[in-house]
Amino acid sequence: MTAMQVGSAVFAVATTTDEHAQCRIAHKDRTLQATGPQWYVTPGAWTTAFYLAVIFREKERITALCQVPLSLLRENGERFDEYHYACIKTLQTYWLGGPDLVQNLVAAVDSTDPQAASDPESAGKLMYPPMEMFHRFIRKDHAGFTQALTTALQWHKEYWSEESRMYQASGLVALAPLAMACIAHDAGIPIEVESEYLPAVLLGRNWCGEFPT
Image 1 (tube, helix red, strand yellow):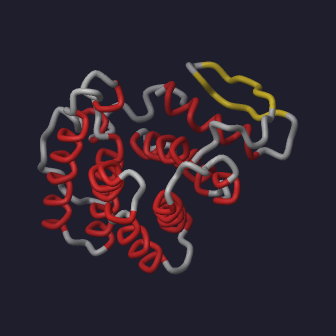
Image 2: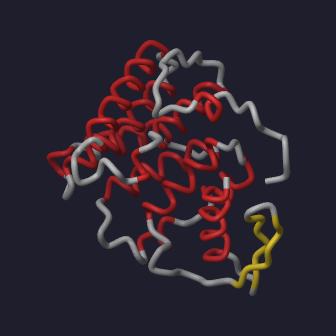
Protein backbone atom coordinates (compact mmCIF):
# COMPACT_ATOMS: atom_id res chain seq x y z
CA MET A 1 0.00 0.00 0.00
CA THR A 2 2.74 2.46 0.97
CA ALA A 3 4.65 1.70 -2.24
CA MET A 4 1.50 2.52 -4.23
CA GLN A 5 1.02 5.79 -2.33
CA VAL A 6 4.64 6.84 -2.75
CA GLY A 7 4.60 5.93 -6.46
CA SER A 8 1.58 8.13 -7.06
CA ALA A 9 3.00 10.94 -4.91
CA VAL A 10 6.14 11.08 -7.05
CA PHE A 11 4.05 12.10 -10.04
CA ALA A 12 1.71 14.31 -8.05
CA VAL A 13 4.58 16.55 -6.91
CA ALA A 14 6.23 16.39 -10.34
CA THR A 15 3.16 17.60 -12.21
CA THR A 16 1.41 19.99 -9.81
CA THR A 17 1.31 23.66 -10.77
CA ASP A 18 1.05 24.63 -7.10
CA GLU A 19 3.87 24.92 -4.60
CA HIS A 20 2.67 21.85 -2.71
CA ALA A 21 0.62 18.71 -3.21
CA GLN A 22 -1.47 16.86 -0.64
CA CYS A 23 -0.66 13.15 -0.56
CA ARG A 24 -1.66 10.38 1.80
CA ILE A 25 1.27 8.11 2.66
CA ALA A 26 1.47 5.48 5.42
CA HIS A 27 -1.89 6.41 6.96
CA LYS A 28 -1.08 10.12 7.16
CA ASP A 29 -2.04 13.10 5.00
CA ARG A 30 1.17 14.88 4.05
CA THR A 31 1.97 18.18 2.40
CA LEU A 32 4.79 17.65 -0.08
CA GLN A 33 6.68 20.32 -1.94
CA ALA A 34 6.43 20.42 -5.71
CA THR A 35 9.54 19.06 -7.41
CA GLY A 36 8.92 19.37 -11.13
CA PRO A 37 10.75 16.89 -13.38
CA GLN A 38 13.35 14.78 -11.56
CA TRP A 39 15.74 12.03 -12.63
CA TYR A 40 13.46 9.39 -11.10
CA VAL A 41 10.34 10.55 -12.99
CA THR A 42 10.70 7.92 -15.70
CA PRO A 43 8.56 5.55 -17.78
CA GLY A 44 9.59 2.70 -15.49
CA ALA A 45 8.47 4.57 -12.38
CA TRP A 46 5.18 5.49 -14.07
CA THR A 47 4.44 1.92 -15.12
CA THR A 48 5.09 0.61 -11.61
CA ALA A 49 2.92 3.34 -10.06
CA PHE A 50 0.12 2.65 -12.53
CA TYR A 51 0.09 -1.10 -11.96
CA LEU A 52 0.11 -0.64 -8.19
CA ALA A 53 -2.79 1.81 -8.38
CA VAL A 54 -4.73 -0.65 -10.54
CA ILE A 55 -4.10 -3.52 -8.13
CA PHE A 56 -5.31 -1.40 -5.20
CA ARG A 57 -8.27 -0.11 -7.27
CA GLU A 58 -7.30 3.53 -6.67
CA LYS A 59 -9.35 5.17 -9.42
CA GLU A 60 -8.39 8.76 -8.62
CA ARG A 61 -4.70 7.89 -8.57
CA ILE A 62 -5.02 5.97 -11.84
CA THR A 63 -6.71 8.96 -13.48
CA ALA A 64 -4.03 11.33 -12.21
CA LEU A 65 -1.29 9.07 -13.52
CA CYS A 66 -2.99 8.80 -16.90
CA GLN A 67 -2.92 12.57 -17.16
CA VAL A 68 0.87 12.67 -16.83
CA PRO A 69 2.16 13.84 -20.22
CA LEU A 70 4.53 11.57 -22.10
CA SER A 71 6.74 14.60 -22.68
CA LEU A 72 7.48 14.71 -18.94
CA LEU A 73 8.50 11.06 -18.93
CA ARG A 74 10.77 11.59 -21.91
CA GLU A 75 12.77 14.26 -20.07
CA ASN A 76 14.54 11.58 -18.02
CA GLY A 77 13.78 8.55 -20.14
CA GLU A 78 16.78 8.41 -22.45
CA ARG A 79 17.60 4.84 -21.39
CA PHE A 80 14.09 3.58 -22.10
CA ASP A 81 13.09 2.07 -25.44
CA GLU A 82 10.19 3.45 -27.43
CA TYR A 83 7.98 0.52 -26.49
CA HIS A 84 7.75 1.86 -22.93
CA TYR A 85 6.04 4.98 -24.24
CA ALA A 86 3.81 2.98 -26.58
CA CYS A 87 2.59 0.85 -23.68
CA ILE A 88 2.02 3.89 -21.46
CA LYS A 89 0.10 5.67 -24.22
CA THR A 90 -2.11 2.60 -24.65
CA LEU A 91 -2.91 2.38 -20.94
CA GLN A 92 -3.62 6.10 -20.71
CA THR A 93 -5.86 5.97 -23.76
CA TYR A 94 -7.84 3.07 -22.33
CA TRP A 95 -8.36 4.58 -18.90
CA LEU A 96 -9.25 8.06 -20.12
CA GLY A 97 -11.45 6.77 -22.95
CA GLY A 98 -9.36 8.40 -25.64
CA PRO A 99 -9.47 7.67 -29.36
CA ASP A 100 -7.42 5.14 -31.32
CA LEU A 101 -7.14 2.58 -28.51
CA VAL A 102 -6.84 -0.38 -30.87
CA GLN A 103 -4.26 1.39 -33.01
CA ASN A 104 -2.20 2.30 -29.94
CA LEU A 105 -2.48 -1.23 -28.58
CA VAL A 106 -1.29 -2.78 -31.82
CA ALA A 107 1.67 -0.39 -31.83
CA ALA A 108 2.48 -1.31 -28.22
CA VAL A 109 2.35 -5.06 -28.90
CA ASP A 110 4.41 -4.73 -32.06
CA SER A 111 6.98 -2.48 -30.39
CA THR A 112 7.78 -5.06 -27.69
CA ASP A 113 9.32 -7.35 -30.32
CA PRO A 114 12.56 -8.50 -28.63
CA GLN A 115 14.47 -8.22 -31.91
CA ALA A 116 13.98 -4.46 -31.89
CA ALA A 117 14.68 -3.85 -28.19
CA SER A 118 17.93 -2.87 -26.51
CA ASP A 119 17.13 -5.44 -23.80
CA PRO A 120 15.43 -8.31 -25.66
CA GLU A 121 14.88 -10.44 -22.55
CA SER A 122 13.08 -7.72 -20.58
CA ALA A 123 11.00 -6.75 -23.60
CA GLY A 124 9.97 -10.31 -24.39
CA LYS A 125 9.41 -11.65 -20.87
CA LEU A 126 8.25 -8.59 -18.93
CA MET A 127 6.83 -5.94 -21.29
CA TYR A 128 5.17 -8.00 -24.02
CA PRO A 129 3.11 -10.37 -21.80
CA PRO A 130 0.88 -7.74 -20.13
CA MET A 131 0.22 -6.06 -23.47
CA GLU A 132 -0.81 -9.44 -24.93
CA MET A 133 -3.09 -9.96 -21.92
CA PHE A 134 -4.56 -6.50 -22.45
CA HIS A 135 -5.04 -7.27 -26.14
CA ARG A 136 -7.04 -10.39 -25.25
CA PHE A 137 -9.04 -8.44 -22.66
CA ILE A 138 -10.01 -5.74 -25.16
CA ARG A 139 -11.11 -8.44 -27.63
CA LYS A 140 -13.15 -10.16 -24.88
CA ASP A 141 -11.21 -13.32 -25.64
CA HIS A 142 -11.52 -15.06 -22.27
CA ALA A 143 -9.71 -18.25 -23.29
CA GLY A 144 -6.95 -16.22 -24.92
CA PHE A 145 -6.63 -14.07 -21.82
CA THR A 146 -6.23 -17.13 -19.61
CA GLN A 147 -3.55 -18.52 -21.89
CA ALA A 148 -1.77 -15.15 -22.04
CA LEU A 149 -1.85 -14.91 -18.23
CA THR A 150 -0.44 -18.41 -17.88
CA THR A 151 2.36 -17.59 -20.32
CA ALA A 152 3.07 -14.28 -18.59
CA LEU A 153 3.53 -16.03 -15.26
CA GLN A 154 5.80 -18.64 -16.82
CA TRP A 155 8.00 -15.96 -18.36
CA HIS A 156 8.00 -13.97 -15.12
CA LYS A 157 9.25 -17.03 -13.24
CA GLU A 158 11.87 -17.74 -15.89
CA TYR A 159 13.13 -14.15 -15.87
CA TRP A 160 13.36 -13.82 -12.08
CA SER A 161 14.77 -17.31 -11.55
CA GLU A 162 17.99 -16.32 -13.31
CA GLU A 163 20.80 -16.46 -10.74
CA SER A 164 21.63 -12.75 -10.77
CA ARG A 165 17.98 -11.79 -10.14
CA MET A 166 16.50 -14.57 -8.02
CA TYR A 167 16.87 -12.71 -4.70
CA GLN A 168 15.41 -9.40 -5.87
CA ALA A 169 12.10 -8.37 -4.32
CA SER A 170 10.75 -7.28 -7.71
CA GLY A 171 10.31 -10.91 -8.69
CA LEU A 172 8.12 -11.93 -5.75
CA VAL A 173 4.91 -10.74 -7.44
CA ALA A 174 4.17 -10.59 -11.17
CA LEU A 175 3.10 -6.95 -10.93
CA ALA A 176 2.03 -6.25 -14.52
CA PRO A 177 0.20 -9.57 -15.08
CA LEU A 178 -1.50 -9.12 -11.69
CA ALA A 179 -2.70 -5.64 -12.65
CA MET A 180 -4.08 -6.92 -15.94
CA ALA A 181 -5.77 -9.79 -14.12
CA CYS A 182 -7.34 -7.26 -11.72
CA ILE A 183 -8.73 -5.27 -14.66
CA ALA A 184 -10.17 -8.44 -16.17
CA HIS A 185 -11.52 -9.68 -12.83
CA ASP A 186 -13.36 -6.43 -12.20
CA ALA A 187 -14.84 -6.63 -15.70
CA GLY A 188 -16.30 -10.04 -14.94
CA ILE A 189 -13.71 -12.29 -16.54
CA PRO A 190 -13.09 -15.31 -14.30
CA ILE A 191 -9.44 -15.70 -13.30
CA GLU A 192 -8.86 -19.42 -12.94
CA VAL A 193 -5.08 -19.37 -12.91
CA GLU A 194 -3.44 -19.81 -9.50
CA SER A 195 0.15 -18.87 -8.82
CA GLU A 196 2.39 -17.70 -5.98
CA TYR A 197 3.13 -14.71 -8.22
CA LEU A 198 -0.57 -13.78 -8.31
CA PRO A 199 -1.75 -13.15 -4.70
CA ALA A 200 -5.44 -14.01 -4.47
CA VAL A 201 -6.09 -11.43 -1.74
CA LEU A 202 -4.98 -8.64 -4.10
CA LEU A 203 -6.75 -10.07 -7.11
CA GLY A 204 -10.03 -10.46 -5.24
CA ARG A 205 -9.94 -6.92 -3.70
CA ASN A 206 -11.15 -8.41 -0.42
CA TRP A 207 -9.70 -5.58 1.67
CA CYS A 208 -11.04 -2.61 -0.36
CA GLY A 209 -12.69 0.10 1.75
CA GLU A 210 -11.36 -1.13 5.08
CA PHE A 211 -9.34 2.06 5.71
CA PRO A 212 -8.62 5.42 4.03
CA THR A 213 -5.98 5.24 1.32
